[in-house]
Length: 148
Image 1 (cartoon, rainbow, N blue to C red):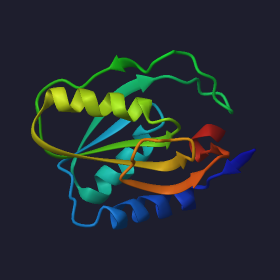
Image 2: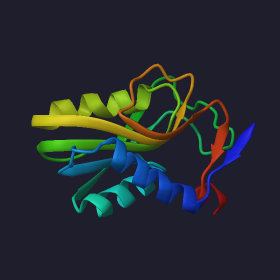
Image 3: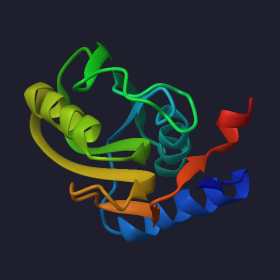
Image 4: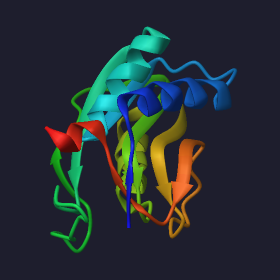
């Protein structure tokens, strides 16, 4: 089953994530490409902080998505040392493998860092602890950017 998420829902999601993470102010927001970049941009604007992109893939862009890699594959990493509070963002967390891969990369590149995670949609099958999310569902989300 599909669940349609509107741009208005995205704005609400960004506000809810900021509210949940109250007291945590990121120095860097990292968007997991491709679709996690969109909420990451919005959150980096809200927090007025640096934005980085980490392109990691496991699933196709189809709806419902199909697995194209057995494990998450890093297509583009971040260059340079990361410091301070880091917020890693994706639009959808299904199992947590991709965001966990991102965390491991950030830990390697990081010095004296604190990491939090956020997503718009957390699937109920996800066993990974996500610090902030908008909704948890079994349904397949259709984001506004999927309609373009």
